[in-house]
Length: 532
Image (cartoon, one colour):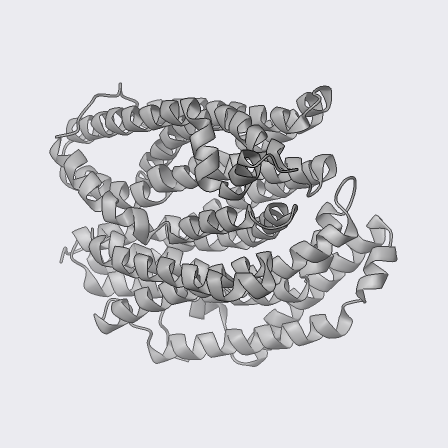
C-alpha cells in the first residue's frame, strides 16, 4: 500500500460526493428535458399504433448502445484505461484510445450498416407479433412496415452514440464527469425540436421524431470532441484488434455483455412479447419505464459512474480497506435515495403520469394503464440501482466472468417470470417479471461480494438501512392518506394537478427527512463508517 493511501481514503467520501453531485445535477437536467421530450411526444402521438412503433424503433439501437457503449464496454474499458493512465506514459494511453476507438468504431459501423440494410429482418426478429400479422395480412400489418422504415432512420444513431460514450468514458476516467453527464441533454433537445418543428409538417409525425433521434446522435458526438482535445487525448482512430490493451478490454467485455445489460435484454424480451399484446402495450410500458429511469439515472447510474474509476484506482493501489469503504458508501447512497423514490413512485404513479402526459392524444385511460406498469417496475427500483453499483465491485477488479453467470440466471428467471405473469396480467406481468429478475440479479451479486469480504455491510450500515426503510414507510403512509381520489385527479385542471402533486412530493420528502432524523439518522452516516 502506498504511503499516501490513508489520506486518500479520508478524502475519498467527500470527493465522491462532490463528483456524484456534479453527475447527478447534469443527469437531473438531462432527465428533466427527457420528461419534457416525453410530454411533447405523448401530446403528439399518445399511446397508439404509431407511438408503439416509434418507441420500438428507438429501443433497439438504444439496447445495442448499452451493450457496445455505456454498459459492458464502459465497465471493461474504464479499469484498463485507469491502469494505463496511472501506470504508463501519456503516449501509451493515447495509443490505447486510438486503437480502441478505431476497433470499436469499425465494428459498430459494420453492425449499423447491416442493420440499416436488413431493417425488415431486425423488425421481424424483435417485433415477431407484428411480422406475423403482416405475413398473414392482418389489420395491423402496417406496424411491421413502419417499424422497418423507422429503423433505417434511427439505427445510425448507434454508431454516433457509441463513439460519444467512448469519449465520455475517457473524460470520466480523467475526472471530468460533468461533460459526459451533460451530453444526453443534447439528444433530448434534438428530439424536442424535431417534435415541435419537423414532425407536425409530415403526414407521419413519427418519421420526424426518428430524424430527431438521428440528429441527436450526431450532435452529441461532435459536442465531445473539443473537450477531448482540451484534455490532450483527441487522437485519430486506428485499427487495433490484436493490441494488448484492446485484447484485454474485449476479453473483459464479452462476458460483461450479459452481466451488466441483463435489464436491457429483459426489456427487449418484454418488447417481443408486447408485440403480441393489444395496441398501446409498448407505449404504456415505455411511459412507465421513462418515469422509472428518472431516479435510476439520477441516482443509481450517477453513483455507479463516479465509484467505478475510484474502485478501479483502489484496486490498482491494492487498498482493500479503501475499496470496501467506497463500495459500502455506494450501497448507502443507493439505499438512501432509492428506497424513498421507490415508495413515492408506487404510491403516486397515476398522479405523476396524469400531470406529465395527460393531454393531447394521451388519455386518462392511458395514464391508468401506464400506472399499473409503473407500480410493477417501481417495486424493483432499488434492485436495479443496486445492480448498477454492485456490478462495479466486480468490473473494477477486472472480473467479468462471474457476473455473466448471475446475469444469465437473472435473464432465465425473467423469461420464466414472463410466462408466469404475462398470461394472467398482460403487459403489467412483463413489468413484474422485469422487477423480479432485477432483484434476483442484485441478490446474487451482493451475496458473492459479501461472502468474499469485498462488501462489508457493517452494523452501522445495517442500522442505516433500517432507518431509511422505516422513514420511507412513514412517508408512503402519509402520501396514501393525503392523495386525492382518481376521479378528483381526472376532474381537476392541469394547474390544480401540478399544485397537488408538488405538495404531495414536498410533504413526502419532508416527512422522510424528519422521520429519518427522529430515528437517529445523521448526514455523517452518508460520509463514513462512524459509529452511532
